[in-house]
Length: 108
Image 1 (cartoon, rainbow, N blue to C red):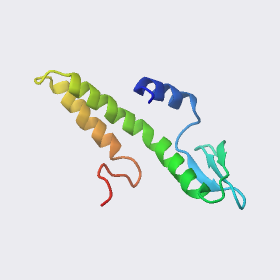
Image 2 (image 1 turned 90 degrees about the horizontal axis):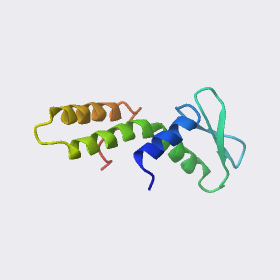
Image 3 (image 1 turned 90 degrees about the vertical axis):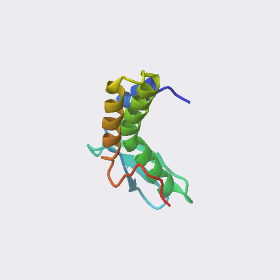
């Protein structure tokens, strides 16, 4: 599994967010960035739509998820009386909740 810093580097070198899936012909789905630039194409006939939607959702959520992961890591490493880490964790959770139509709770 990549480290948080490695994921941040990959994200920094990738196309700008958000990405969105678009049907591209009968059997293909492509991902485009916010500038309508082509990111990649997925061409499995049976699950192209679902896989493209998953890829876009995962990549678009990654910045907020990395914030939460870093804040949680800092919180776990902090002393009990270190308020900075608690505040940082709460701020990261607020960012996570800004994901469009997102939630921090699992669906029931």
